[in-house]
Structures are given as structure tokens and as C-alpha cells.
Image 1 (tube, helix red, strand yellow):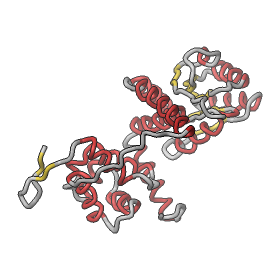
Image 2 (spheres, helix red, strand yellow; image 1 turned 90 degrees about the horizontal axis):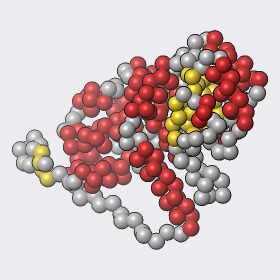
Image 3 (cartoon, rainbow, N blue to C red; image 1 turned 60 degrees about the vertical axis):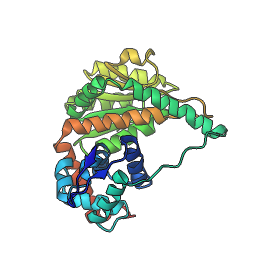
Image 4 (spheres, rainbow, N blue to C red; image 1 turned 180 degrees about the horizontal axis):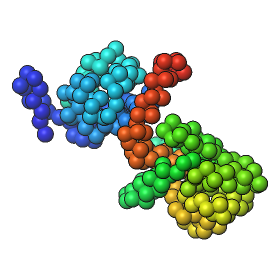
Length: 296
């Protein structure tokens, strides 16, 4: 494929995998807001056309504000959008070659490799995203949305809730078992909740099964993130989303479930568009005004 810039002279374009590698090198190492990650994803998928966009063009295509595009360029360390666009053009037309990886791995690297294989399993399992989209739509429509995680699963439940509340009006993370959990599930159901997202990772707490039983008695439906297709927990769920948990390290690694929950949030945001994106934009603007985060 060849492009013709304003000069009328055709430019050779690198192959698609090389372009993606160059762009990832451009984006890696920078902390991007959700809106900025949306811009980055668009550029990864449409780099050959985007090199000719103005900041207003890019904002319109992505569905964000023009200041968000300017902030995106600044977050990557550029003085402005024109400077960033030149780097983008270099990524598409230039000759930036990623460093070839070393084939020799130490013990810790091999453990990481086992995690990569688990993530590949997760990726392959998401070849048909219909269930993920179905669950995302139901969770996004639940008011309030209840997220339950006990013991080892509590941090992931809180991470999910922290991110979800940026686009949903009422998210309730429950991490205390027993009668307190039952009370809060009942109150959520009385407030209009329809779904619970439960995270059940090994080792599986008995209290979580008891809480899910109560949730069903309260009329709530359950979407479960777990690592096994058959267990006492899956018997209590209406929808089961599977992600492998690596046990090669001294402690279990939850990279797979974390990626799955992030994919679920991403799909929920698509379900909520354009309202969800507007909420993210609003959060970014308020955070910028209040100087909540360091600029670099």
C-alpha cells in the first residue's frame, strides 16, 4: 500500500506488524488516562490514515475532545500535536526496528513465560467475544452494580470497582463476609440492582459460596470470574467468565483474571457509549483542573 502526501510523492509504508511494534514503542512507558488509551488504540488500528489527520480530525474519529488529543501528545512527551504527528509518520514510513529478544531465559523469566502462555490461552478463549459482550451489557445496566470479592479476590474486586465507578453512577464493592455481606446484598437488591459480579479465585472461600446463595435468594443474578469451569462456585453463577491463574510462582499470579476484568470494563465502556466516554472525559477534565495527578 502506498500513500501520497501533500507533495504528491508516494511514500512506502512498513508492514503492519512493524508499524504496530513501532507505535507500541512510542506509547510504552507512559501512563495514559482511559481517554488517552482510547486514542492510542485508534492509532494502532488506523495508523496509516491518522498520519495525515489534524488534531481536530483525530478527535472527531476517536470521539474525544480536541484538548484530549493535545493532552495525549503532551503525555507522550511532545511539545504539541504537530511534533507528535511527525513521530507518528516516522513510525509508519520510517525504519525503526525493535530489538530482537534474547532466546536465553533465566528461571524467573521462564516463570514469566508460563504466565504469557496463560494469557495466550485467555486470548484464544476470547476469540468469540459474544459472552463477554452479553455480560458487559448486563452489568453496565445494573443500578447499582455490586462487585463481590473476598480474601485473595478482594483487591481485584476493588480495582474493578474503582475503575467502574468512573463511568457508572453507583458501584458497591463488598469484601466482608457473613451477615454483613448478606445485608448489603439485600439492600442492593432493594435499591434496584439486578446483577452481581463475583470474583472467586483460589483458594475459594466458603463464605463466597454462602454469599452467592444469599444473592440468588435476594433475586440477584451472578456473573462469576474464576479459573475453573466446574466448581461449587460455578454452580451458583448465571454466567461464568474463565481466566487461568498461574501457580508456577511461590504465590498465585492473577494476571489472567486482571486482564479479563479489564477486558470486561473495556466492553462495558463500549456498551455505555457515548455516555460512558463522556463520563471519562469529564473525569479527565476535573482531574486536570484539580491537578490530581502529576503531569509527568
